[in-house]
Length: 354
Image 1 (cartoon, rainbow, N blue to C red):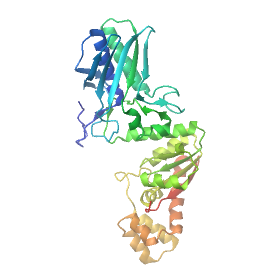
Image 2 (image 1 turned 135 degrees about the vertical axis):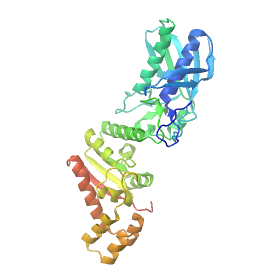
Image 3 (image 1 turned 90 degrees about the horizontal axis):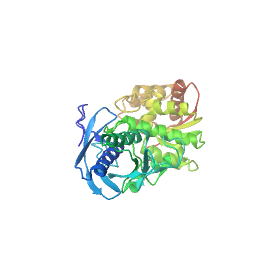
């Protein structure tokens, strides 16, 4: 039950929680109408594909039916992989289709997300998928009843602690997500989406200062450096620096602290806005030119230009504050170029000891 990855990386695609919930719902509703269990169902994905799902734990009762699908994220390191996404369907005296969340599905408590506070964390596209699948089954069997659909995820509350949900104000469980229905391994788009949501939540909470960190060690360090900041102000942006800065400006953030290890910040100082190794590399000649402007001896400049790593450079200069300040100034200048000076920026270079 997976889609082959066409990009030659030999990594399996998987399915989103939204696709799994839709398949479970279709199965439970067919069971409700026919009185018979089903082993497999097919659904249409937003990615313009059809997917076939194995149905597990089918249960038929007098007034409702239950079915589940085991979440498979393919080869993506998805913490929700292995969870069972359950759907319970029952007829309702109310017209239309009501969709709600049960055990293990989070509840939204903060503004800035696609779902309003007080509602289950079932995103707009999965909601649309659920309604479309249910409507198709009802119409195909000529059923005119109202319907109530409850999505639940046993174990979802515990797994949610490993996600961004608590920081985003989604409490008590995971989110039912997915804009395409498929999970692309190591997807840039999913990380970027979490960055945007983090910025929006902080903005809606009235926070005008954010701390962007480029990795785990940097994030740990800035939490210690700014102990009075709220958790929502810290956002781990990975390598998506230019993207994240632009989204912060668009959202109206006024002050930005960018924290990273020397290697990442040296790339920024050299005017690289995507810090991934496949998109940019450390320019040791650039770092040597910084040393030359400062007035380092030729022997030190030569050692910098022939260094193997930025950590090696830091050892050569012994984390000289004048050198680091020059790197910060160049970084801030480059950020100002892409923002038009619409946001105040500070840079924190994190020593490797963190």
